[in-house]
Length: 67
Image (cartoon, rainbow, N blue to C red; front, side, top):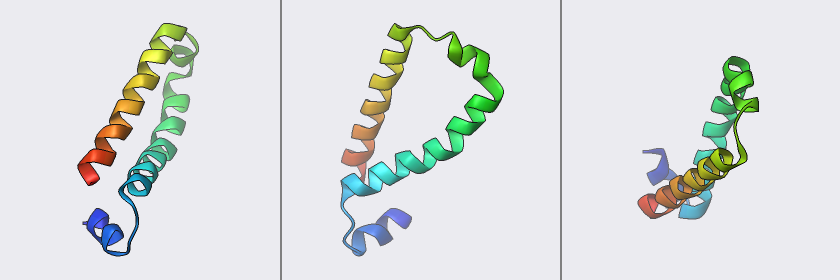
């Protein structure tokens, strides 16, 4: 419902998707750092690259889904 309100106000789908990802990150990153700091330090660069790619695909999903 909030997406519909934003679209009616003229906000672009890309901006809605970006804000959705930013707000989720603001909630999840501190939680992950507080509970899994050692695991995060041990992530290999290949795994971090795959996770980043997954994040980009999720962002693309939100942009197309919201459109």
